[in-house]
Amino acid sequence: MDTVTLVDEQIRDGEKLLDRLAQEGLPVRAAGWVKPMDEDRWSLYLVTPLVDEQGPIGAYREVYRVLRSLEDVRVKDYEVKLVGEGQRIASDLLEAQPRYPARGPQLSRLTSVGGMPVEGVYVYPLAKMRLCLPVAYVYRREDSPGSRHWHRNSRIIAPAPTMRRPGFLLVLEATDRQVILIFAVPCDEQGSIPQQTQEEYEDLADQTFTSVRPGQEKVSGSFSGL
Image 1 (spheres, rainbow, N blue to C red):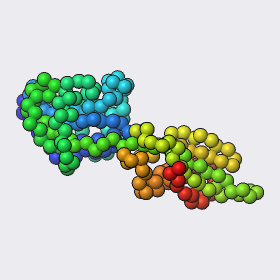
Image 2 (image 1 turned 120 degrees about the vertical axis):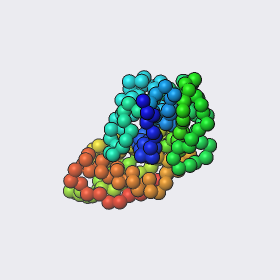
Image 3 (image 1 turned 90 degrees about the vertical axis):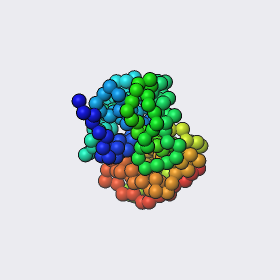
Image 4 (image 1 turned 30 degrees about the vertical axis):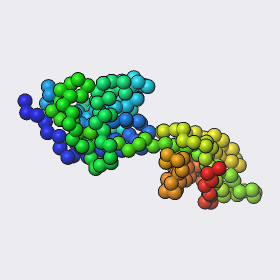
């Protein structure tokens, strides 16, 4: 049987999957397309702690959910192979990971992966995982009879990056006078939240506030790192 060739579209679609996994806080330590000697097609191997944390079934369920949410991608479910961090294949892909950022995967000199003879290996250079800080978005209703105006303020409620899954966490309080929403907001390694990210999450918080208190007006607030 003829060998299936790895095409540019598959490489780009693999990058799309990795980007979306990172956005959703699903950790991938290493990733690459591998063509075993005894198989007729390439497979996308992902090294992820999800395998050990949730078991293979739970890990595949999470990754397949993200993959199926992407439109117009050539990567199929059966092409994705998840690998736990303790497996030998994980060590080989981690060692082969490009040391410097580059566009797209790089052809590795590996002739075997995890003891499995291979015809070729393309390894993706991965960006570091996103760190997140818990941020409280506090909405207080204007203190006047019948007012529907709310003031928003937001502040970091932890001193260091401790979370890795960005997005909405919970409604901490929801009364007639005050609503407190908690989000995990992406930050850099120094624990700083970029201005653009602040604005994006303020918009997201406002949307959530509207669902909690429909029909209310809001005035712009401020962001505090205290």
